[in-house]
Image (cartoon, rainbow, N blue to C red; front, top):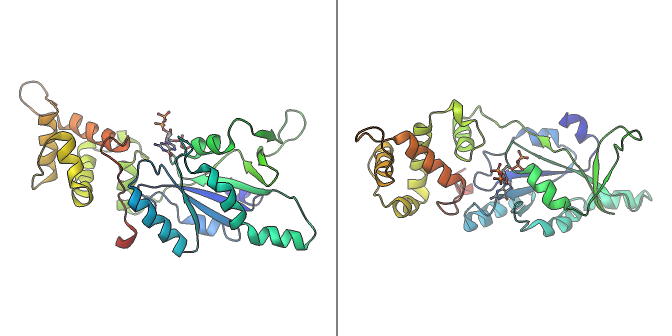
Length: 267
Ligand code: G4P
Protein backbone atom coordinates (compact mmCIF):
# COMPACT_ATOMS: atom_id res chain seq x y z
CA UNK A 1 0.00 0.00 0.00
CA UNK A 2 2.80 2.35 0.87
CA UNK A 3 4.50 1.69 -2.46
CA UNK A 4 1.30 2.80 -4.19
CA UNK A 5 0.95 5.89 -2.00
CA UNK A 6 4.57 6.86 -2.53
CA UNK A 7 3.89 7.37 -6.22
CA UNK A 8 1.56 10.23 -5.29
CA UNK A 9 3.92 12.18 -3.10
CA UNK A 10 7.00 14.41 -3.25
CA UNK A 11 8.18 14.11 0.34
CA UNK A 12 8.40 11.43 3.02
CA UNK A 13 8.30 12.61 6.63
CA UNK A 14 9.85 9.69 8.46
CA UNK A 15 9.24 9.44 12.21
CA UNK A 16 11.74 7.66 14.41
CA UNK A 17 11.83 7.30 18.18
CA UNK A 18 14.47 9.65 19.57
CA UNK A 19 15.38 7.10 22.27
CA UNK A 20 16.41 4.53 19.65
CA UNK A 21 16.74 6.45 16.37
CA UNK A 22 18.19 3.55 14.40
CA UNK A 23 16.36 0.55 15.82
CA UNK A 24 13.07 2.38 15.20
CA UNK A 25 13.85 2.87 11.49
CA UNK A 26 13.18 0.46 8.71
CA UNK A 27 16.11 0.68 6.29
CA UNK A 28 13.76 -0.31 3.44
CA UNK A 29 12.60 3.29 3.47
CA UNK A 30 15.78 4.21 1.59
CA UNK A 31 14.73 1.97 -1.31
CA UNK A 32 11.02 2.81 -1.03
CA UNK A 33 11.71 6.52 -0.96
CA UNK A 34 14.23 6.69 -3.77
CA UNK A 35 13.82 9.89 -5.74
CA UNK A 36 11.65 11.51 -3.05
CA UNK A 37 12.59 14.33 -0.73
CA UNK A 38 13.05 13.12 2.83
CA UNK A 39 12.82 14.49 6.35
CA UNK A 40 13.54 12.53 9.53
CA UNK A 41 11.79 13.58 12.73
CA UNK A 42 13.23 12.49 16.07
CA UNK A 43 9.86 12.09 17.76
CA UNK A 44 9.32 11.66 21.51
CA UNK A 45 12.32 13.94 21.94
CA UNK A 46 10.87 14.82 25.37
CA UNK A 47 11.62 11.27 26.56
CA UNK A 48 15.15 11.20 25.13
CA UNK A 49 18.37 12.66 26.50
CA UNK A 50 18.67 16.28 25.30
CA UNK A 51 22.42 15.99 24.64
CA UNK A 52 21.89 12.80 22.65
CA UNK A 53 19.14 14.47 20.62
CA UNK A 54 21.72 17.03 19.53
CA UNK A 55 24.22 14.28 18.67
CA UNK A 56 21.64 12.41 16.61
CA UNK A 57 20.61 15.60 14.83
CA UNK A 58 24.25 16.11 13.84
CA UNK A 59 24.51 12.46 12.79
CA UNK A 60 21.57 12.71 10.38
CA UNK A 61 22.64 16.14 9.13
CA UNK A 62 26.10 14.76 8.36
CA UNK A 63 24.44 12.00 6.36
CA UNK A 64 22.74 14.71 4.28
CA UNK A 65 19.30 14.10 5.82
CA UNK A 66 17.02 16.96 6.89
CA UNK A 67 16.17 16.37 10.53
CA UNK A 68 14.32 17.94 13.47
CA UNK A 69 13.52 16.90 17.03
CA UNK A 70 9.85 17.07 17.97
CA UNK A 71 7.39 16.23 20.69
CA UNK A 72 4.19 15.38 18.88
CA UNK A 73 2.29 15.12 22.12
CA UNK A 74 2.93 18.70 23.23
CA UNK A 75 3.55 20.14 19.78
CA UNK A 76 7.07 21.31 20.62
CA UNK A 77 9.23 21.62 17.51
CA UNK A 78 6.31 21.17 15.14
CA UNK A 79 6.27 24.79 13.91
CA UNK A 80 9.78 24.49 12.50
CA UNK A 81 8.73 21.73 10.11
CA UNK A 82 7.21 23.95 7.43
CA UNK A 83 10.47 25.75 6.79
CA UNK A 84 12.32 22.44 6.66
CA UNK A 85 9.81 21.06 4.14
CA UNK A 86 10.52 23.99 1.82
CA UNK A 87 14.25 23.38 2.22
CA UNK A 88 13.97 19.64 1.62
CA UNK A 89 11.82 20.21 -1.47
CA UNK A 90 13.71 23.23 -2.82
CA UNK A 91 14.93 21.34 -5.92
CA UNK A 92 11.45 20.11 -6.79
CA UNK A 93 9.93 23.55 -6.27
CA UNK A 94 12.59 25.06 -8.54
CA UNK A 95 12.02 22.34 -11.19
CA UNK A 96 8.29 23.10 -11.13
CA UNK A 97 8.95 26.81 -11.42
CA UNK A 98 11.13 26.32 -14.50
CA UNK A 99 8.32 24.35 -16.08
CA UNK A 100 5.93 27.14 -15.34
CA UNK A 101 4.17 25.28 -12.55
CA UNK A 102 3.65 27.64 -9.66
CA UNK A 103 1.71 27.26 -6.43
CA UNK A 104 1.52 23.48 -6.69
CA UNK A 105 1.64 22.29 -3.07
CA UNK A 106 4.22 19.77 -1.92
CA UNK A 107 2.48 16.48 -1.23
CA UNK A 108 3.83 14.57 1.74
CA UNK A 109 3.25 11.37 3.63
CA UNK A 110 4.16 10.42 7.17
CA UNK A 111 5.82 7.05 7.65
CA UNK A 112 7.24 5.01 10.49
CA UNK A 113 7.02 1.78 12.43
CA UNK A 114 4.01 1.18 14.73
CA UNK A 115 3.78 3.19 17.93
CA UNK A 116 6.40 5.74 16.90
CA UNK A 117 3.74 8.47 17.09
CA UNK A 118 2.47 8.85 13.51
CA UNK A 119 -1.18 9.53 14.37
CA UNK A 120 -0.26 11.87 17.20
CA UNK A 121 2.06 13.73 14.87
CA UNK A 122 -0.51 14.10 12.08
CA UNK A 123 -3.05 15.46 14.55
CA UNK A 124 -0.56 17.86 16.03
CA UNK A 125 0.91 19.02 12.71
CA UNK A 126 -2.40 19.34 10.91
CA UNK A 127 -4.13 20.84 13.93
CA UNK A 128 -7.83 21.49 14.03
CA UNK A 129 -7.90 24.19 11.40
CA UNK A 130 -6.94 21.87 8.58
CA UNK A 131 -9.29 21.29 5.70
CA UNK A 132 -9.69 17.79 4.45
CA UNK A 133 -9.84 17.45 0.71
CA UNK A 134 -10.63 14.61 -1.63
CA UNK A 135 -12.61 11.48 -0.90
CA UNK A 136 -15.79 13.42 -0.32
CA UNK A 137 -18.64 10.94 -0.04
CA UNK A 138 -20.19 10.40 -3.45
CA UNK A 139 -17.87 12.86 -5.10
CA UNK A 140 -14.34 11.59 -5.37
CA UNK A 141 -12.93 8.24 -4.60
CA UNK A 142 -9.32 8.28 -3.74
CA UNK A 143 -6.87 9.44 -1.22
CA UNK A 144 -7.70 11.82 1.56
CA UNK A 145 -5.39 14.80 1.71
CA UNK A 146 -5.06 17.30 4.49
CA UNK A 147 -4.33 20.77 3.17
CA UNK A 148 -2.05 22.44 5.68
CA UNK A 149 -1.57 25.61 3.70
CA UNK A 150 -1.21 26.51 0.06
CA UNK A 151 2.28 25.03 0.04
CA UNK A 152 1.74 21.65 1.67
CA UNK A 153 -0.71 18.77 1.57
CA UNK A 154 -0.41 15.70 3.76
CA UNK A 155 -1.78 12.26 3.08
CA UNK A 156 -3.99 11.56 6.08
CA UNK A 157 -3.12 7.87 6.37
CA UNK A 158 0.45 7.26 7.45
CA UNK A 159 2.69 4.66 5.86
CA UNK A 160 3.31 1.85 8.29
CA UNK A 161 6.76 0.36 8.09
CA UNK A 162 7.57 -3.07 9.39
CA UNK A 163 10.24 -3.00 12.09
CA UNK A 164 13.44 -4.89 11.29
CA UNK A 165 13.37 -7.75 13.73
CA UNK A 166 16.12 -9.80 12.09
CA UNK A 167 18.70 -8.18 14.32
CA UNK A 168 18.00 -9.39 17.89
CA UNK A 169 19.44 -6.18 19.31
CA UNK A 170 16.92 -4.14 17.31
CA UNK A 171 14.12 -6.40 18.56
CA UNK A 172 15.26 -5.83 22.12
CA UNK A 173 15.37 -2.04 21.79
CA UNK A 174 11.89 -2.05 20.27
CA UNK A 175 10.70 -4.16 23.18
CA UNK A 176 12.21 -1.66 25.65
CA UNK A 177 10.23 1.21 24.16
CA UNK A 178 7.05 -0.85 24.08
CA UNK A 179 6.80 -1.34 20.33
CA UNK A 180 6.47 -5.10 20.60
CA UNK A 181 3.74 -7.14 22.17
CA UNK A 182 4.74 -7.63 25.82
CA UNK A 183 2.76 -10.88 26.01
CA UNK A 184 5.20 -12.68 23.74
CA UNK A 185 8.21 -11.77 25.84
CA UNK A 186 9.69 -12.73 29.13
CA UNK A 187 9.34 -9.55 31.15
CA UNK A 188 12.12 -10.41 33.59
CA UNK A 189 14.62 -11.16 30.83
CA UNK A 190 13.69 -7.91 29.14
CA UNK A 191 14.07 -5.96 32.39
CA UNK A 192 17.52 -7.52 32.96
CA UNK A 193 18.63 -6.52 29.46
CA UNK A 194 17.31 -3.01 30.08
CA UNK A 195 19.19 -2.86 33.37
CA UNK A 196 22.40 -3.80 31.54
CA UNK A 197 21.99 -0.92 29.08
CA UNK A 198 21.00 1.54 31.81
CA UNK A 199 23.96 0.54 33.98
CA UNK A 200 26.23 1.42 31.09
CA UNK A 201 24.72 4.81 30.19
CA UNK A 202 22.62 6.01 33.14
CA UNK A 203 23.67 4.11 36.29
CA UNK A 204 22.27 6.77 38.65
CA UNK A 205 18.70 6.59 37.38
CA UNK A 206 18.23 3.17 38.97
CA UNK A 207 20.05 3.76 42.24
CA UNK A 208 18.23 7.05 42.79
CA UNK A 209 14.71 6.04 41.83
CA UNK A 210 14.65 2.70 43.65
CA UNK A 211 17.22 3.37 46.40
CA UNK A 212 19.20 0.26 45.49
CA UNK A 213 22.80 -0.44 44.59
CA UNK A 214 23.99 -2.22 41.47
CA UNK A 215 24.70 -5.92 41.89
CA UNK A 216 27.08 -7.93 39.77
CA UNK A 217 24.26 -9.70 37.94
CA UNK A 218 21.32 -7.71 36.62
CA UNK A 219 18.82 -10.25 37.96
CA UNK A 220 20.15 -9.60 41.47
CA UNK A 221 19.62 -5.87 40.88
CA UNK A 222 16.06 -6.63 39.78
CA UNK A 223 15.58 -8.55 43.05
CA UNK A 224 16.83 -5.49 44.91
CA UNK A 225 14.25 -3.37 43.11
CA UNK A 226 11.53 -5.89 44.00
CA UNK A 227 12.58 -5.78 47.65
CA UNK A 228 12.80 -2.01 47.74
CA UNK A 229 9.37 -1.63 46.11
CA UNK A 230 7.69 -4.29 48.26
CA UNK A 231 7.03 -6.69 45.38
CA UNK A 232 6.44 -9.97 47.19
CA UNK A 233 4.63 -13.17 46.35
CA UNK A 234 3.07 -15.20 49.14
CA UNK A 235 5.49 -15.38 52.03
CA UNK A 236 8.87 -13.78 51.59
CA UNK A 237 9.36 -14.72 47.93
CA UNK A 238 10.19 -11.79 45.67
CA UNK A 239 7.84 -10.97 42.81
CA UNK A 240 10.46 -10.15 40.18
CA UNK A 241 7.84 -10.24 37.44
CA UNK A 242 6.05 -7.34 39.07
CA UNK A 243 9.34 -5.49 39.59
CA UNK A 244 10.22 -6.05 35.92
CA UNK A 245 6.92 -4.51 34.82
CA UNK A 246 7.43 -1.60 37.18
CA UNK A 247 10.88 -0.94 35.74
CA UNK A 248 9.84 -1.14 32.08
CA UNK A 249 6.78 1.05 32.72
CA UNK A 250 8.93 3.61 34.53
CA UNK A 251 11.38 3.67 31.63
CA UNK A 252 8.71 3.96 28.93
CA UNK A 253 6.88 6.78 30.64
CA UNK A 254 10.01 8.80 31.33
CA UNK A 255 9.89 8.36 35.12
CA UNK A 256 13.52 7.20 35.04
CA UNK A 257 14.43 10.47 33.36
CA UNK A 258 15.23 11.37 29.78
CA UNK A 259 17.06 8.40 28.35
CA UNK A 260 18.54 7.56 24.95
CA UNK A 261 19.62 3.98 24.45
CA UNK A 262 21.50 4.22 21.15
CA UNK A 263 24.57 6.35 20.52
CA UNK A 264 25.72 7.48 17.09
CA UNK A 265 29.38 7.00 17.98
CA UNK A 266 28.85 3.34 18.82
CA UNK A 267 27.88 2.51 15.26
P1 G4P B 1 1.41 5.34 15.73
O1 G4P B 1 0.31 6.08 15.03
O2 G4P B 1 2.75 5.54 15.09
O3 G4P B 1 1.14 3.89 15.95
O4 G4P B 1 1.58 5.97 17.20
P2 G4P B 1 0.54 6.86 18.06
O5 G4P B 1 0.37 8.21 17.45
O6 G4P B 1 -0.66 6.05 18.33
O7 G4P B 1 1.39 7.07 19.40
C1 G4P B 1 1.81 5.99 20.21
C2 G4P B 1 2.00 6.48 21.64
O8 G4P B 1 3.09 7.41 21.67
C3 G4P B 1 0.81 7.21 22.23
O9 G4P B 1 0.79 6.92 23.62
C4 G4P B 1 1.18 8.68 22.05
O10 G4P B 1 0.53 9.54 22.97
C5 G4P B 1 2.67 8.61 22.32
N1 G4P B 1 3.42 9.72 21.69
C6 G4P B 1 3.41 10.09 20.40
N2 G4P B 1 4.26 11.11 20.20
C7 G4P B 1 4.83 11.40 21.40
C8 G4P B 1 5.83 12.34 21.83
O11 G4P B 1 6.40 13.12 21.05
N3 G4P B 1 6.15 12.29 23.16
C9 G4P B 1 5.59 11.43 24.03
N4 G4P B 1 5.97 11.48 25.31
N5 G4P B 1 4.65 10.52 23.65
C10 G4P B 1 4.29 10.51 22.35
P3 G4P B 1 -0.26 5.98 24.26
O12 G4P B 1 0.29 5.59 25.59
O13 G4P B 1 -0.62 4.90 23.31
O14 G4P B 1 -1.50 6.89 24.41
P4 G4P B 1 -1.71 8.10 25.46
O15 G4P B 1 -1.57 7.48 26.81
O16 G4P B 1 -0.68 9.14 25.20
O17 G4P B 1 -3.10 8.55 25.13
